[in-house]
Length: 455
Image 1: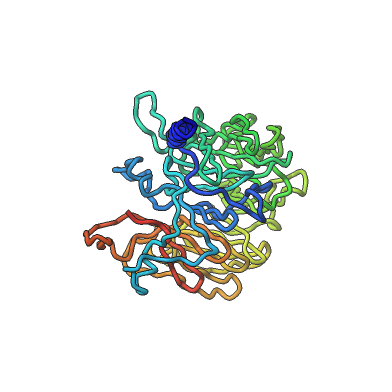
Image 2 (image 1 turned 120 degrees about the vertical axis):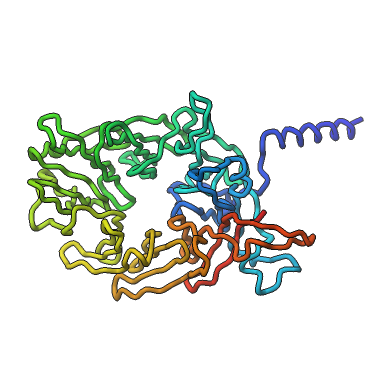
């Protein structure tokens, strides 16, 4: 009788296990304890290292595709992981020549409830959770899906506890928008959302994350440009411009502490002059200043007190109307010009051309003196010291790499690509055509390996 009761209990437990979507993989141990991070962990967005494991979206589908189907996309783009400390093994039928384009046996499916592999994915770890963005699946008032809206989710490292954190406040993406995470002045982390508003302006929102999740708060409206504190900023705020209430065609500059929401007026502006923030590295902000039909790019260290944005020859940075994608590199900064060229410049020195627009599409990341870039069929790096370009990956077929979507763990670069052969035969002898994009990795010498599990 006792054994019968135990069997019934076990059956009920198994059913409950399946219905609640409990863990299908083990938890992650670091030094013998369950993984738990006091500081935010981030690996460029498309992958995440937690202990010995790499977490990633198995496959990639853009939600902006006209034929996008969410359920079909997540059938390949679910959350996976693989142990980086163990050698990969393959099916006995896989030859040595086929291994770099074959799925390792060690791939584990963590959770397949949400689409992970898609454009502008952001994934990070904090506490005992993975946080990630995913296309919003809630219907609009017209009972349609609007996949330009994005929600924030989190789950534990074993796939348990999946929860949507912004269910009723999904945020929109668009030109000039930003989604990022930064530590606030109160030493807590905040999810910062800059989304499009009315009349070419933006609205800035902040969400406290960690053991306790706060509520999304709007901290600035009618924003015309902005510069958000990064990891190296001592001033934990967002500097932004808005149209002056005192004079037409004039920009006023303000700052907002995204932890407290406190707003400060920094510069009421000069009549008929406009400012547009272009980027920020630490406490140095870059901005375009327009006055009397002259527009040039300047910089300012915002720790230097009042009179923040009065341009002078001493703080002129670059003779152009605008620049973008500004990042710290070496002893200076890299950026893209309006025609797509890659430039390196120290604050008070002459600029140096690194790459022309036809040589790359996107800046992936910067590591010390090297800038890593991608295009539809290549990954390259260039030294800001001697301008030497090295090609890490070069694929013969066009449009094989999803340019700009990347991860980096200090040793490997992770990217999405199509299989070398889209037509293939499985172990049962059946022929398949697979044009999906899957996660690959490459070392800096171009030795690449498929780590996504193909359908």
